[in-house]
Figure 1 (cartoon, helix red, strand yellow):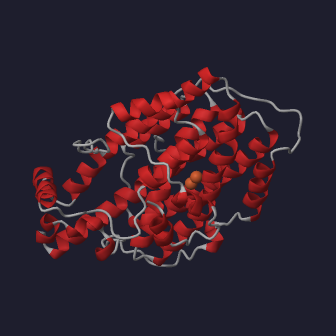
Figure 2 (spheres, helix red, strand yellow):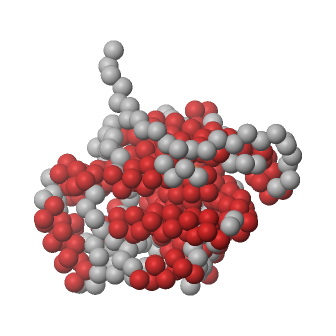
Figure 3 (tube, protein in one colour):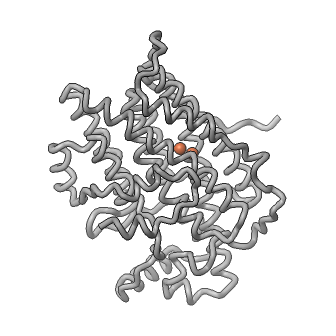
Length: 358
Ligand SMILES: [Fe+2]
Ligand SMILES: [Fe+2]
């Protein structure tokens, strides 16, 4: 028997029994009903007979942000394809590992939320995330290439799971990690040339709209009912988690993203010297080339995470100053986020929502 790769740790999570069995948070009850109604089955509803050629990229050339970089254009056609195929596999692998994290945080919410309808809702999210792990695992297997989990994503999810309070778990997962994921899913849905992957992601996005809405209807109310000291404690958690994200993505002015070892592995597998790549990126910046953002691209940090945190009151006057001191701008426009929450089809076109956003 082969040995399974398992990593464990203990968390200080609170468990809450609830004996009132009363459905008095109407919005949450509606979300729960909707979740039951809209369950889909990836095994039955997706066409797995669609062939995926692991040697071919799943990202369209003209939707691949890095294609515009002169350094990438100078690579041979076959090397460009290899690079795109590996970038695709690296991203899909992060989706898979992130979904496993979401499965565990959703289960944690089921244990810990104090309200009956909150528990029922969180159980549906747990099932949603299980189905997401299932379909991404099956798809990644077709690519025949699994990258390890990015240490940045792993750290953020571990900090969330270890935070000890369900409000922090919901902030870390339903707002920050899922904000990142929603942006990435939406962008991949637009960028991929694979029909199977597109319909898989549309199914996932349909579910994710509820996960984002949960953060808003439930966490917002809880934070506003909190003692001010507890609210500041939650705000500090949100600040720390966002700073982790900011460091990983290079959000601070004049700062470059920290090198992600899984991306370095992509370069290695594509036979691109990391030094040449860094020089190529510098050259593109000096030429003023905007990369990584074809029209309609969602910016997770600005369009999803920040507005979600502001909306529920997880950014207070005190932490606002802390963000400013770190050179991080606060974005409050929730129009993209709200468009996402209202979308039960997973096929929303965000150009309009983005046009309305400042
Ligand atoms: Fe998910
Ligand atoms: Fe989710």
